Length: 147
Image 1 (cartoon, rainbow, N blue to C red):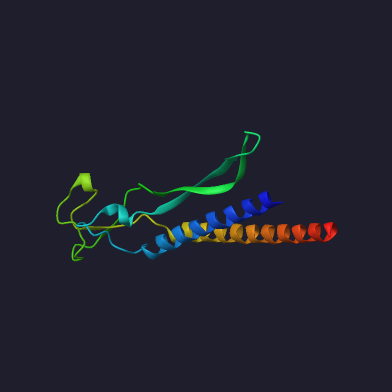
Image 2: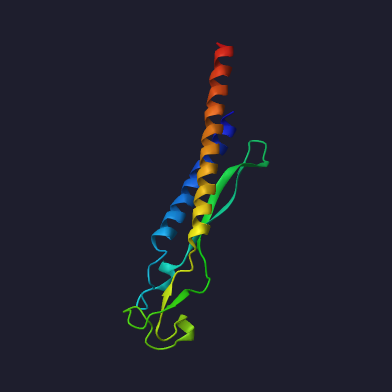
């Protein structure tokens, strides 16, 4: 029974991390990339999930939920908008820095994609809460039968 609760809790934590990543992406969706700063801080992020395994008393590995293995950076090229009067516009073309003279780089973040990721993470978060509540109810009923 406790294994089921651990799985649900790990799912809740993973979906919370996904929601945090989505909110960070939405916050910087229209932020111009400052050419003087590290461009990676303006890139879209994503949460990579993987099964969480533990070794049981019998020596066998078991999957007991999910974990966030990394918060990665999307290496897609920046979205370019022609605005030569913008203080963040590139002064000269520099292919190594992905800059074109007169253009402002923006993160390659798309509103519909982020909203679908948020919706998906929210629904999975809710589903894990329902499973955790059902597990707690079953555990309480089992204890009542024993007593």
